[in-house]
Every structure is written in structure tokens, then in C-alpha cells.
Image 1 (cartoon, rainbow, N blue to C red):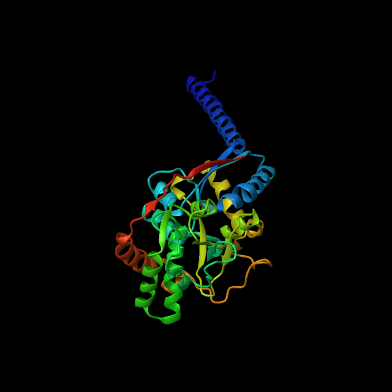
Image 2 (image 1 turned 120 degrees about the vertical axis):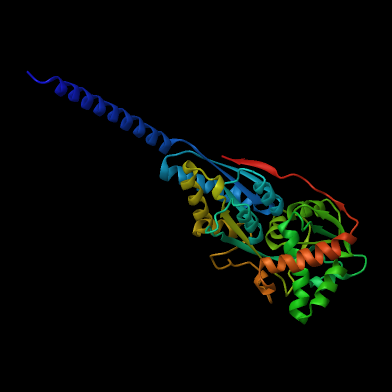
Length: 348
């Protein structure tokens, strides 16, 4: 006769095996369910990215993702001024991926510990800042220095909310600084240009809309947005100054907001944007791709410069945008500011 402790051990061992089998079964079920559950990715992007993302990159990437993984994917997107979006994300907006007009807005997210210090943003595209005026170029504009003409009604994206507004400031200031190497002349040109500013708008896209409705004589914007407007029949003329700045646009993952379930899709989306297919889509919507040669049809730039020429974003932001514009020029302005809220768009 077997001892009683043998039976007790056998019962315990059998119970343990059954319990382990149940744990493994339900864990496997959870893994299988997790691998097939639909994924939602939230993207925040500055306003002029709307067409290339919603009409080009998002639909193509969703199809590719679903084909490769068998999982449904929904991309929810919010578009608005780059600076406004960066502030909203810092305050808790649920972005998984952010496309900003420039690197400084990525820095804000790192300062708020939403993007890991080791996470690097990636260049997705670039576009020079250009002058947009009425057909026929009535004022004969050729350079940013021409914007000081008396009586010219200038619209301007607001540098406090808009990446385009900040890039425009750097173009206005840097174009004369690089010609003369004299900061006092660059500051003087900036002051003279801003004496002609009649309206501040929250973003590049809003500035275009206001101009299209008949306000103003001229404004500064991204070449990409001006070319896109021209393509859809908006009556305007694009002037590409010989000396202009290249607006370099960035994409970054918002690490603090990305869940384990979203991580693979988020990284795949960023890889798609910076890969050949995504870069080709940016070019199709008139951006100059960051990682491909510009396609035929883009104007050759005579003397382009970058923010690095002005010392990089931290120095340029502090010395030009904050010290010169915010502290010395903006307090003297008496302008109507047309602010609006970002619009939400859900991609299917």
C-alpha cells in the first residue's frame, strides 16, 4: 500500500500541472487576441501637412500595415499650428507621433519628458520660405528686403503659434545678415518689414486662406503650400528670393504616450514616412523630400541657407525670435490676431 504522503504529492503535482496549463492557455489566448486587435495611432501634425498625410501617406500605410500584419489600423490626426500643437502635447494631448515645423518644438517635448532624451527626431522633408503676392507681382517683389516698401499690406503667420511664422522671421532677418554680416542691419530690416504687417494669423494655412479671401497684398509662407494652392487654382504669384531659408520639418515619436500595443505600428509609420515610399509622397505634394533628390520641376535655389547658418535653433530662437522680435518688435504692434483651434481628422 502506497503511503498517504505519496497521494498527497501526486494530487499537488497534478493540480500544479493543471494550473500551469490553464495559465499558459489564457496567456496564449491573450497574446493571440493582442496580435489581432485593431490598433489606433494618434498623429499631431502642423497644418500644411494635412493633404500629404490624409490623401497620400496614411491610406497607403494603412493598406500596407493591414496586408502585412492582418490587423486593422486607424490613424487619428489633428492638424494645427506647430507651436500650438507642441504646447497641447506638453499639456497632455494624446499624440503618439508628432510632425513639427522645426526641431525647437521637439525640444519642448523633451524638456517635458514626453520624448526620451535618446530619441532622435527624423527629417521628413524641407521647403524654402517664399514670398506670395497677387498675380503679376504688382509691387515688383524679388527679395525679402522689398517687403519694406511703404504702403505694402503684409499678412504674417504668428511666430508665437506658427512654425511658419518663426521660419519667416529667420528668413527676413537672415537674408540681410548673410549679405552684410551686420546684425544691426538685419534687425533694422526686420523692424521695417514688420511696420507693414497688417494681420497676424495662427498658421501658414490660415494666412493663405485669408489672402485667398482678398486680404493683404503679400505674405511669406512655405514654397510647398504656395505651390499646392497654385495647383488648385488659387490666383497668386510665387517669388523665390535668391537668399532664403530652408524650413526643415521633423517627425518624432512621443514616447510617453506610446503603449506596448501601439509601439510596432508607431515605429512602422515613422519608418514609412522616412522611407522611399513616404518620401515620394512628400514630393508628390510639393515638399522637397529629406532623403531623396528633389524631383524635376522644383525651382533651383540660388543662395539657400539653414538655421544652422544662424547658429542652430536654440541660438536663433533666443537671439532672433525672443530677443529681437518678442522683446523689441512685438510690443509695438497693434494688430488684430485671428486665432483658431486645430481641426481633427480621422483617417480610415
